Image (cartoon, rainbow, N blue to C red; front, side, top):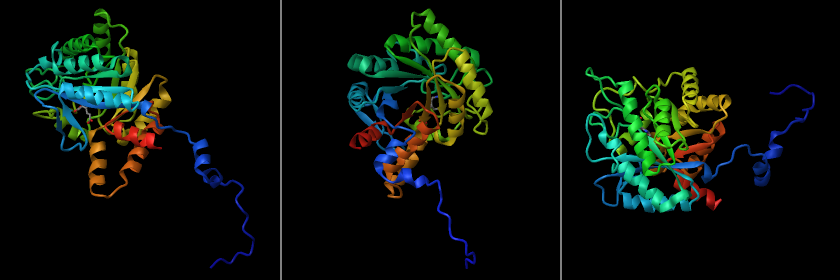
Length: 334
Ligand code: PBG
């Protein structure tokens, strides 16, 4: 029971004043969400007719090159400015030769997308070898089965040049080898591609959230895991060292990956650097939303837009997301 007799003093500050109407809330909103800050990841697959759905990523599929052109038209039509291309080859070998073949699946896809869309769509080439090696690791192996950093850099140089020759607008190395940005920058410059920017997967963690992607890309390591080259999820300060180093090596854009479990890292990165910063809203982040939505447990549209807003609020200029197309549609509906 309240025993005091003193009259209640009304609060001077009332936060609710600015929340009263939709228009007022819009006026004071700090973060915007717009399809122009989305990049849509796609899988170009060899040996696929049309599209082959990816079971753990409902709504996503591996696409034949011809089908990918149709997808690209849809992406551009929705106002999404960028597409991130992954190649899924039929044949693999120990060194990932398919990764830098002139007529490799990624190179063919990049060429087709540029032919079809020209400057309407920015084509970002993911640069890694895990889709092309028979052991599924992101680089070449030593005799004892470790990933050989420096030999892998030479292979990455070949991949980068082949992707630039195919017409890629941006090269995005995701293998987490030391010195990969510098090696790729040097190779691109030497081959006449000094104008092609590098998007560094700078702070990329060894994450369970890549599970569905590995099914989609056929890139699961056949032994061991990626903890000897990707970052330990427990480390926050180390991410700043990775970002600094990639910038020193010549990266033009930086990325944190995954996004949701690493928003602290993203916020730190934003506070520290002025260059364009992205976050990768990865496959399991997408799959979890889809699974819960399928069961009717969540309001999918509301949750997707909230997730994307939170990634932007934490500091991302752009978000790489499998939700890009549906989110662009929802945003245009208002
Ligand atoms: C390739 C690569 C991976 C992802 C992007 N590039 C997989 C991995 O590192 O194992 C994951 C993307 C996703 O989960 O959506 N190295």
